[in-house]
Image (cartoon, rainbow, N blue to C red; front, side):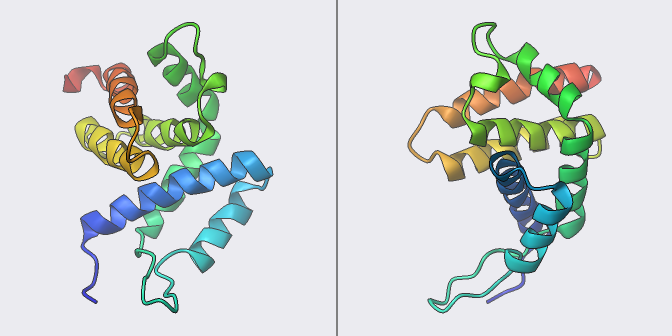
Length: 154
């Protein structure tokens, strides 16, 4: 098996961040507990059937989790402004809520161009919802959030 590229490692880190945020919300576990579990048990672990979880960019994973937790209120408010009034963030699917928090953390941090963040998290949505309309929904919400966080980029 060839070593993953930097881009593949960043993509895997984003997917893991969404999974970790989802797990934190459902289990009530702390960010430190979940982060440790993911780093120990999910990053690049081999399995008997020959399949392997992708190696993730640990720094991006950690930064995304930390920012999503620390700035959750700000990110949730941005998400609420991007959603229709009758459908606040508290009512949306928990996987999408975790996705918007992870993407929002990257948008607020400002280290990655907003169009890259949007494309990456739309891909994450496709991984979780391969047959659904959710990826288009994610694209629209993240576009709105990106325009709020980075108006100069549009």
